[in-house]
Length: 181
Image 1 (cartoon, rainbow, N blue to C red):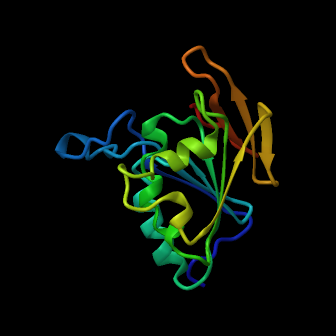
Image 2: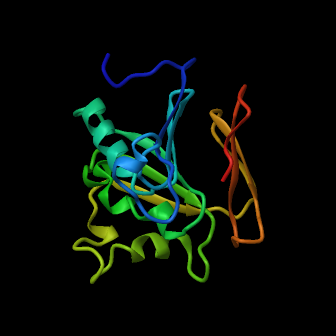
């Protein structure tokens, strides 16, 4: 059936790999020009790491794949630099009330995670606010440096000197480090 994946399948797709700003054009054809967004499917779950500009294309793909069926996913925000959150206002599943999006991440620099994510969608930056989005979005700020998402993956978060807190590595059972952060 279209849009289904089996429990034993693990799939990883890089929708964005650039830092700082999206860089489209002939010089970025090989690796792409979108900022960070990684899709992981494991144990029947969809886990997205970061909401850079690549999440826009992921959202279009998911909407087409799932059609009328609801999308349920977890979005992990490694840190709240612009290149890791700038695509969220353009994530098509956020505009459908049937979808459930759980956002997890650590605090921002001086404001909480929810305030930073919602802040980029306030006037005069964007025509809709976060509360206007019809999907079921929950934002949870993480206090622990290590956590897991059900049985699909375990995360280890470390604090390098250049970030207050950020995701350092994403590990999936049976695989070595996936996301070096």
